[in-house]
Image (tube, rainbow, N blue to C red; front, side, top):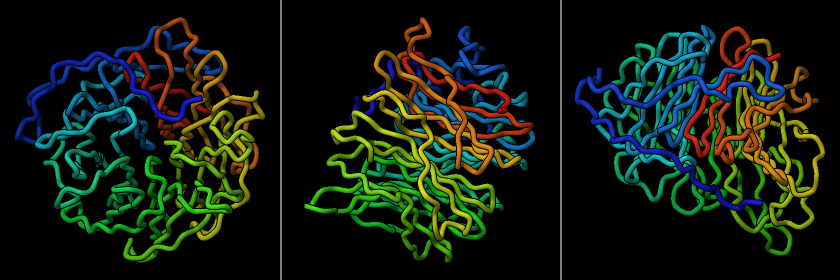
Amino acid sequence: SPTAASEPTVGVLPPATPTEAASPTVVPTLDAEPSPSATVEAAPELTVVDFPEARSVSVAAVADGTVYVALGQRENLFVARSSDGGASFDAPVQANLDAPAFVMAIERPAIVADESGRVSVGWLQAGLVWYALSEDGGRTFGPSRQVTSTPREFPTLLGMGVDEEHNPVLAWLEGHGSLSVARFHDGGNSFPVSRVMEHRVCDCCQPQPVVVGGQVLVAYRNLEEGEGGRDIRDIYVLRSGDDGETFEEVRVSDEAWYFPACPISGPSLVTDGEQVYASWMDGRNDDEGDLSETDIWFAASADGGQTFSRNVRVNPESEPGYYHNLPSLAVADDGRLHIVWETDEDVRHVLYYASSSDGGQMWAAPQVITSSDDGTERGRPQYATLVAGGEGRLHVSWVDNLGAHVASWTGE
């Protein structure tokens, strides 16, 4: 079972040259064509669009059916737009017009969008955190803005959420186990940055911020000392009612996971505007304590993140040695919950999908979205993000040896 992420092997095109204007004149040559392997088991009506030259990817969707995909290629960040529910995408446009981007599969670009046509992206480069905004549905992007004014100490693993007025909240790790948050109200002209946790965060596990009812919530994997000096790496939520000035800790895990190293696996956190939902991986049932057996867990909060429910295992009881990892949650307009996660099995690597119609207390049997035994050389599907769009459509992105991909289908 893996203890660290592996990088996909993909082709690299010559980098597109950023332009000074908000509307770039250079059209990147990233491909976006339907995949010949679009039909996979147990996922009816699945449509897959491939971006073979991209090395990192995230997806966003809004209720009107528009879908956006953020693509990292070399030192550039592109955004492609779909107006047909993910069946096809327009030519990608460059989002980092005047600042390079640090591109790795594990360093997914952050992207959020709304129905007014505002699309926000965030990325990292040279010790700085960056942000750019499109106000015309991702067709053009404004200038790159520094979230941090001076280089930070090894910023990594950026996550982003927005409030009802599309003001972003960004969270990332830096240094050795510290967590920083940036929150603003003025359209991105300034980002007050607060380092809210010092040396108590699992330092390779991505945080995830959301805003619900005026509260800023950030899910993360903590690092604390347990019985006998052993490390505990459990899931917490930081909660702020004063726009990120101060935070309180709320425990989400209801059983301690003792593990002596960073599992490189952060939590997923989403909200429907009232309820808050969290999912994560841990190995509380792994008697060997070596990541040889892990599970996907879920918890919900009905009080704005002040308390969380008992933990529910999402994946069915599996064979010993199955490594379930990196869940991504989505909540649809009808209240149904959806989740994807990676599993390393004995003979294949799988991206699974499941849903729940009762608030996450019970989950349907998982379906396969893609796997390494499909007759291609794709290898392990990794770093998936799942979002719910309009008319019950679901969209998931991931990377593998064949590049980046976005699959779309109608959830049941």
